[in-house]
Amino acid sequence: MRHSVYVWKISNLCDMRSYAIYNRFHKYYIVFPLIIYACLMYRMLENTCGKKKMAFDETSYKSYNDPTSRKIMQLYGNGTEKLFEIVQDYRYIEQKKKEVFQSLKQFISRADFDISRENSLNEILSLINRKDQSNIRKTRSTVNNEDTSYYIKRPIYMINCSNIHEIKLKNKIGHGVSKQTFEGEFNGIPVAVKMVTRHQSEVKACVNKINEGHEKKEELRSRCFVFPTMKLMKEILLLEQISHPGFAKLLGYCVRNEDSETTDLTERGIASVFELGERVMVYNLQTLTWQNRLRLGQELADFLNYLEYSPLGSLRIRDFKEEHFLLYNNSLKMIDLDDVDNLEPVCSIYVSADTQAELAKSGKSNGCGFNLTCQRGLCAGFNAKQNMKFMNQLFFKKLLYPTIFPKLISQEMGFLLADIDSYRVTGAGIAQKLLKLRDILQ
Picture 1 (cartoon, helix red, strand yellow):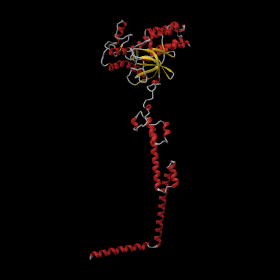
Picture 2 (cartoon, rainbow, N blue to C red):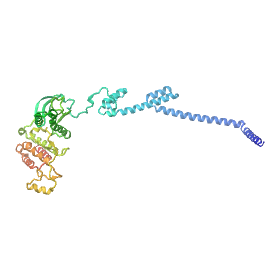
Picture 3 (cartoon, rainbow, N blue to C red):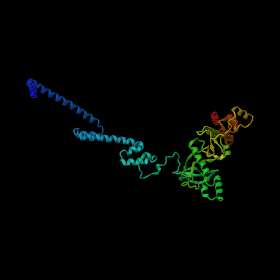
Picture 4 (cartoon, rainbow, N blue to C red):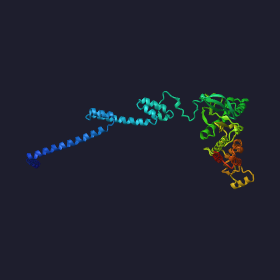
């Protein structure tokens, strides 16, 4: 009973509140402003959202810089959401395409890249394969038509294994203990070809000893070519590391294998090619004019200076012979380097420098020639002195004989020769002195 009364009271209370609200707001001067206010708010919200959408569409349209995107937007506008997605996808594809071409530039040269820019993907990949055969790890592609010329590193010499067979050998022009030299012609250019053959004294003596009755003749014959071939390779490698006009110019070489039984350049294992010079006769140098003698003396002195301070250290010519020098365009150049090294003679390190000097003055040997002191177990400076000694004996005494030159410099030339004989001057000092004498005469 109480519960029913309580519910009745609440219902009456709600009806009374609803009635009061109705009495307050049902009048027109209250309802009408509310309706107008709601309409105004709706219009304001609609205009604001519309401007934002137009601004977004305009910004999106301006960002389409490529012609295809602009054309789509001009024809169809922004009303279709699907077209908008297509344009976005197209722009993404174009961006990825640019990134791909940027990556391809590291494999393709600029000229080839411009040509292949409009080509199909297969043609571009084919070009990459041909250009990058030297580094397969970067390419990861299969080459259908292989061009072996791309596997050979671009040579720095005019003659290499790919064209050495084009040399036409004529006749033998020289030989030494370990190798022979042949005259040849390469595309009209006279050249000298060096190779190891079985006719050399070192090889011939070894082969004859084996042929006396050894069972494994064929196996041991190849060993007879090892040391002479090593000397030829040493000469090639030296000229790869040093460079001076005093050395005969290396035009190229080919190293295929160790076969030395044939002179056929298509099968030859190792061969080196030099510019062809003229044989030097020392007594013929005495017929030269004093101007040419002065020039040759200066060139040889500069060559001695280079040997003393080469990138490999102080080099010594152990086998200093007239046959190892040739005349190229009126300049003397060394052609044989297999007996060149940078080893100074060893000496005792247990004798002090002062003691060594005293021994040298008394004429006693201290382990080093030319009155040199022992430094860290080596006769430092011996190689340069030794080269000076043989260069003086072979060339300087003939080229720089004082009476051949004008009286204005003949006395100075005599003093210079005396300094050379006593080893009181270096290669650089000789070159500077001869240059001053040339300036005096001019």
